[in-house]
Length: 82
Image (cartoon, rainbow, N blue to C red; front, top):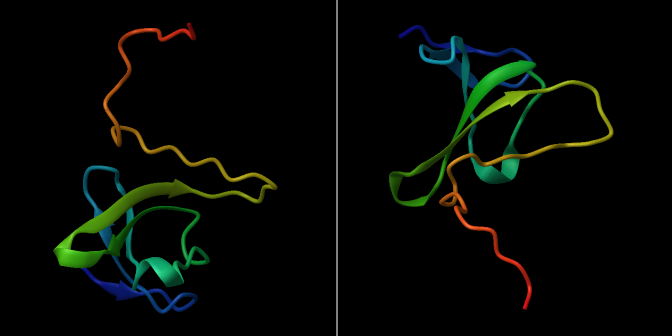
């Protein structure tokens, strides 16, 4: 695994084989940096050795869309108010 330090962010970067994109190793959830790569997988250390990993494709925009696929089970029935 080749590691490099991004000069813009100071963060360690490797390569994510599955997504074929840079893998950015963030320092913690309170100091996320996105200035280095427009498209990358980010990994953020959390407590108890867990990580929050997400794919980001960033463009200049007034909106931020966030989707956590698989974070909750899919709803298989339509619920309607009584």
